[in-house]
Picture (cartoon, rainbow, N blue to C red):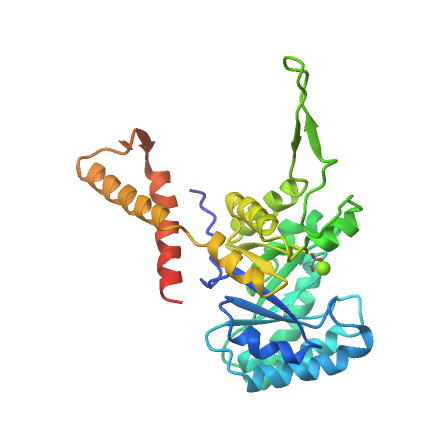
Amino acid sequence: MSFHPIEQAPARLNRSELAVPGSQPQMFEKAAQSDVDVIFLDLEDAVAPDEKAQARKNIIKALNEIDWNTKTMSVRINGLDTHYMYRDVVDVVEQAGERLDLIMIPKVGTAADVYAVDMMVTQIEDAVGLKDRIGFEHIIETALGMQNITEIAGASKRNESLHFGVADYAAYTRARTTNIGGVNPSYSVLTDDMDGVRETHWGDMWHYALARMVVAARANGLRPIDGPFGDFQDPDGYKAAAHRAAVLGCEGKWAIHPSQIALANEVMSPSEAEITKAHRILEAMAEAEAAGKGAVSLDGRLIDYASIRQAEVLVEKAKQIAGA
Ligand code: GLV
Ligand code: MG
């Protein structure tokens, strides 16, 4: 292990994260009663310019009055390049900061963006006398944000998670995409001729971005979270995307529709079989250690101290879910 310590963000369950437009208060109650882990009330792209002020009021009222139970509550503020953002932060934190766990910063581009919001939030928290520090979630969704992802990830002690905003990322990188978060048949490999047959293998055009984000997040103790999948009538497509993200190390995915919550929770939770296997690995390694060995085999496969770390992560996650 490096001598460099990695401080872990608070351990929040973040398997699913529901986007709820601040301009649609009739959706709030249903969201509060859902099985989602995190809710972000949106002031940004799901809200039209002349609805921003009212959406802000709706969110403040809802944070104060609705019983959100144990849900982690976040508000997506407007971008730092807009004139809405300062009032989003001032009004929401001043008037509803008590029930706000996180602020989601969209289109973050540089570490200085994070610093600016941190400075504002710190002043307001001090002035109002808030006990709990509000955390930050950053959406990596521009070319600039991806270029500066390392500095962004380490820019504030408030940082908790990085999110892959695939819709804007496609726009800002000018990627050729069809559905939000979906795949493109043009991103494929045509195999060489094998006995007269050439096959087309579809690829995942988001692989690099997601993998890059996972590294930046984990190297800074943050949660990597996959963003939206636009076609909410395609649960299989959603689950395939969520599985890809989970395999790379993401621990959650957005739901842009309530029907996607259960899918995210399912894919992002370890299965019974995985948990049982993790316990067996821990037991086998404890026995090996007692016998003075550093590596042993279980079911015909090598396990060593790295296997313990993986198993511990899994068992810890299972405990977190059980306690939710
Ligand atoms: C999310 O904000 C996205 O652009 O995908
Ligand atoms: Mg976006």
